[in-house]
Length: 159
Length: 159
Length: 159
Image 1: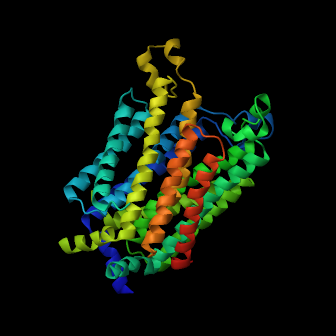
Image 2 (image 1 turned 135 degrees about the horizontal axis):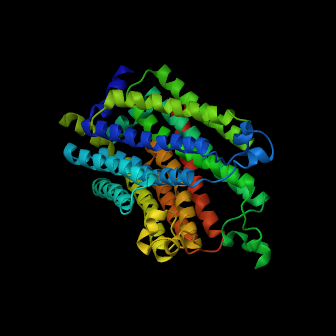
Image 3 (image 1 turned 180 degrees about the horizontal axis):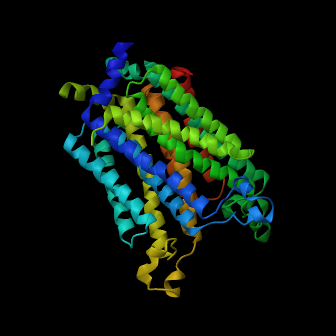
């Protein structure tokens, strides 16, 4: 069994794969942070969506008034959904790209731009910064993912 | 080619990786179940969102009245989105964690808590159970994912 | 280091894994296209959700009137979310399936039906085609994913 283990850990010893593991974990943790920010705004703005979440505020009409939407909560939720839409493709295409044997320098460049773009996107969305800040940071992450997808298809294409 | 195959299947022969494969498949199937529950409530509550989905109820005003939101449908949809937000990080971080060579016992503990937490979360959301049931089950899955992310970064960090 | 690289690229040299890489990249690119279609409809329908996105239309009431929902925008967004709900399970279960050593012919059949079903689903949603076009294409992708999950659990089950 330790022989199998050795072969498995070869994957995580490879530098490109370690870089993928690092940046993927960073962007997924960043995405998870959106849940906490949503919860923070729901509690401070007293804006909930499930009746059972407002039970601690009392019963009837008193609790019902906290079942409402709040612009700050909705903004964080849109940022969270945008993360899902963009980080899921990175998760899949980035893994296949890391396994396609790219140069370490090129791979790091792709991963760093993607992570930087998504972190910038979150700040641009939540502060919010004037456009085109959010648009450009979104486009940078998108372009990097397309570039990785191109290499995967060039290396692995089997229809 | 059978030599390559042998090497590939070594991955799926590793016990930690098999455990990851099992629990990931379980939580993804559970998430997929949310689509069926949504469809069930849309049909029994007659609450649809696309005009083409109500065509069988007749034309004009008669069909239009079924284009509406329903609290039960919306509740399932929120549970589904919460699954996406939490199972996507588990999918990525859990894979990297399984490749980082953890002890089988520790890995199983992580995977079992996560799967148990997400199944409990679904029941807490759909019944619904009074808070903090849903909050605690969400937090358990979140904490386990953070713990796996910590090990991935400690093992593989390459910035 | 080149020895490690060689072992890594064995994965991408395996025909089943190459097929997985190809079809996963295709469906993820298709999903990413939904972002561009949403942006296209937001701009042509002048229907935005963030105040900072309408700043170029002037200030005050003049810009505010473009903060509105549009049926075409909402339709694309529903298609995008449906992609997330269905392509995320394919991403995870499909990877584990590809590592479970299936026959190349069977694997290709699964991947091709899934990709075809999701592309058909997008056309059925956006045109829109009358039901049950969208329902059937959704079900085909769903059934293929269940079939792959069954093989993963049969091959790898470790609870």
